[in-house]
Picture (cartoon, rainbow, N blue to C red):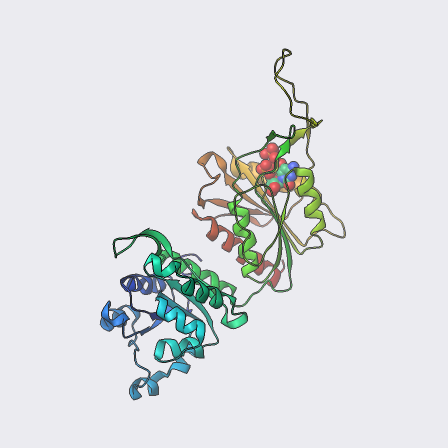
Amino acid sequence: MNSRSLSNRKVLLIVGGGIAAYKALELVRLIAKAGGETRVILTEAGAEFVTPLSLAALSGHPVRSGLFHPDDETSMGHIELSRWADLVVVAPATAGLIAKAANGLADDLASTTLIATDKRVLMAPAMNVRMWLHPAVQANVARLKGFEGFHGVAVVGPDEGEMACGEYGAGRMAEPAAILEAIEGLLAAAGRPLKGRRAVVTAGPTFEPIDPVRGLTNRSSGKQGYAIAAALAELGAEVTLVSGPTGLNAPAGVKRVDVESALEMQAATRTALPADIAVLSAAVADWRVDTIAGGKIKKGPGGPPTLALIENPDILAGIAAPGPDRPALVIGFAAETSDLEANARAKLSRKGCDWIVANDVSEGVFGAEGNAVLLISADGTEAWPHQSKTAVARTLAARIAEHFKDPA
Ligand code: CTP
């Protein structure tokens, strides 16, 4: 699924005038490799940086640039181009193109298409850092992002780094691979198959206090759970993310409830019910301190304190237990350091959940960007290739959508 993630999907790519335009060539190649089709609009300024010939050769279609070319307009006019596309991508999006789109100025083919389209638009800004940070550009970007519904403009990047002009800062166009990932996300979301479904996701570690300044916690970063919450929201689900302490920002469109301890996480997860989907990915502390000291525990002649621990409730087992509030699909995670599949399968039946996403944490998963997981259910085991946590999340969200389309 991953290698042909854009099968038959159509991208209308607008290439603006900037040095990053050369990366548009790689983007067209990546879209083709993923099974997608690209048609290109090259602005007059863009043509100063890349030739129409290279873009035509890579996309397999003639490149459009003018608004008033009778031949072009009769073969596929600008309205038809936008009708043809599933998604419009602007890369590089210059300050000028962003300003035109934000203010409805339509004076060439690229800007006219951006106003005429009813498709989602993805922009990959690229400009000098001072231009990017200019309040006028920031205001235009904020305005574009705020356009609701069909016209909601998504933005990828820009990255921070050394620039062609010799300066350093934010303004470099996102890499083609990152733009491709954003395209995949937006197209996957196009049908919003989980619209009307409610989901609760737990993520991150828990923090079990010892006294007012100390506590027990673990190395979970929360990245995988946050990515799952984002991927479910992308597909239209109404998502509550119950999060232990992490340094992450709440994904767009997700309701985040912050908690610290396992007991708080359990209460917040229950409050988020009823839900159709529960994905419990948090690394819940197995134990908590029996009696939390009211004041800071001081060093003393008696030596170090002995901490009496008691077991935390199993949130997953509780949510998965039969009852009127049990979500239709309950998914747990298994973090194992040995016998991954056997241990995870045992966990599936012990906890009573429907699926388990199993990963081997001996391989440095905590905090890492990538993950190789097994999806374990009563139907069997699937080994997914090593992929980014975002890709794991999207694959899982797509499987969840499939399940609800066609419940077993
Ligand atoms: N989990 C939970 N509540 C707990 C412990 C775990 O909801 N008190 C959930 C996790 O969110 C995860 C799954 O159970 O979805 C498995 O977590 P894991 O730490 O791998 O398993 P444990 O139950 O701790 O089992 P073990 O210690 O045997 O590995």
